[in-house]
View 1 (cartoon, rainbow, N blue to C red):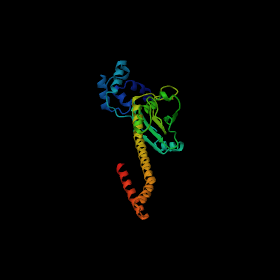
View 2 (tube, rainbow, N blue to C red):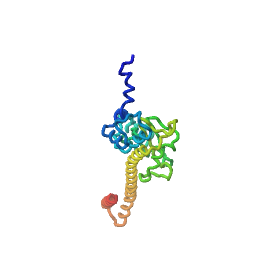
View 3 (cartoon, rainbow, N blue to C red):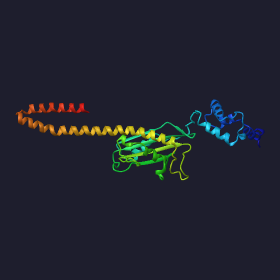
Length: 280
């Protein structure tokens, strides 16, 4: 049995004003924002939505982009988390360096989304092949149409050479690295009904690039540190290799005793180590 209020409700909705409709049916629409939108669109706040013609609706829609509106709530997003991403990479790949980053929630066309990136580098990963990229959307892997996906475009748009990786123009970087990228959103913009590639929205590509560059900078620090440590170990190896021979030669030339030779070798090693550290 329907009550009088239930029977009269449709009339209330159809008779609602534009200002009330915007506040009730849209997220984060404060009275101040609604008044500003309607003022830019040239629509009266007292006008009823059913009385608006198509040009007026289009003006309201365009006015949305001209007003600063608070981002929609992001409690609906379900990111994987950095810890879970790293745990998955460690279980699947034997590498020497792992890193992950979760970007703050962002918005595209009114839809909140969040980007996560994780990588593994070095170890048993092949160093003479293109890197492997794993794409995920709302925790579901995307296995096909990688070349048409915004994730692949974002990876290729980053200059990985500045982070110590090799990269050819128009191709993925090469080296011992694996990338894992995840997009969480209430509405993932797929390019087709097969849901295998994400559309190239500028906001999404921007967030992907920022996340990739963040882990890339830390990867570059790790690679440069490794090269520096390798160079220092190589120089230290030269000292350990040739110092004993220099000591033998000095003992034969200067007719030194064994204790004197050991003292000269120790002093020479100290001088060389100090000069090596100063060069670093």
